[in-house]
Length: 441
Image 1: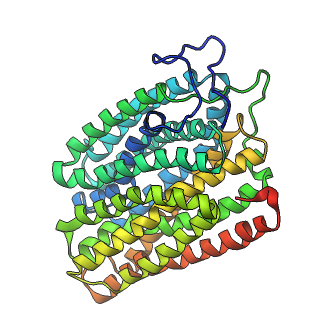
Image 2 (image 1 turned 90 degrees about the horizontal axis):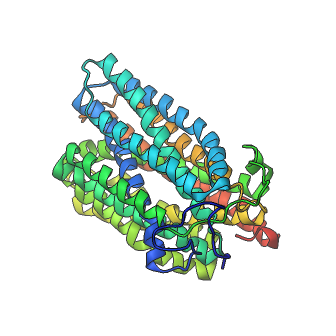
């Protein structure tokens, strides 16, 4: 267990008393992990609902929309390593300072998020400019809060099971947020959705103030250069597999609503599909964490990848009206999602510790980690949407050629990429680690 985290000199204590180490109880889990709920809550509408909203409600062409999303997400991705370095500098001085910046960024995030879905402009060109500007503001503020939250958790340290539990609280509550976000827009509308998000974010930031606090950096510790993580071979190997696996997940996330509405013709069942997927992911997390104790993080993640491919490939065989079958696909692929969300971040925390960079470089690592995550999402929107349009698909299309293109992009391509990620994880991580105890996952 990591030594008790203490505040930097002169820092006020949380109102509940002195800062303390992670004890593993539900109070620690909620105080640290709750912020993951609103952050995931906003992520689903941004990455899944927004493209469909602008294409269906405002008639923005898919190719132009894909270009805007690609540019905004690339800007966000490029900024993440710089944000990570900044997060390290903030946490090095005090957790209080990092918390204050996260709270300020949260306010900006709420304003930008609401503005995206209620643009005060009309016309394709004006909508595209508005979308681009608000996406930049929203993404950047979202990244600041996210990177600080992730680096904070990684600095709490611990062995493999403890790291898995810390990430499990964050990602489990994140899935709860995604679950609410998957249902709320359809049930209550986007206006209520944005207000609920704002309230949840306020609660999450407030609870983080009471969370176990990481140790500040030793006096005189220099802020690490952004390139430092790439000096760690284990990080390079892990990042490559994570990048390919992330693309495999980002493509269906971008296309899921198009598939439900046009291939399955089941628009009314969107809340059921999304809720069953994310609920299964949240409920599966404790099972994956328990499996880590027996197999280790890397092998458990590999099992999750295999499950995802075995289940998701069947979606390619579904057609209009296959509601029950697609619900089963959503549930089982949701179980695989629990592994994707929980285990890579815990693996990364271990890489940081073994490299001797714990306590001063977590932000740098998670900055590049988030860069990879957002690069995946950028490529998914910037490539998949224009390619679909080139093959004759547009929202509402029912021609065999258009639906075939949608099915291949949504079902088949992600499975191929997931298999490639599994091969990378095994050959460059698991097999290498078996021959080198120092790199054991």
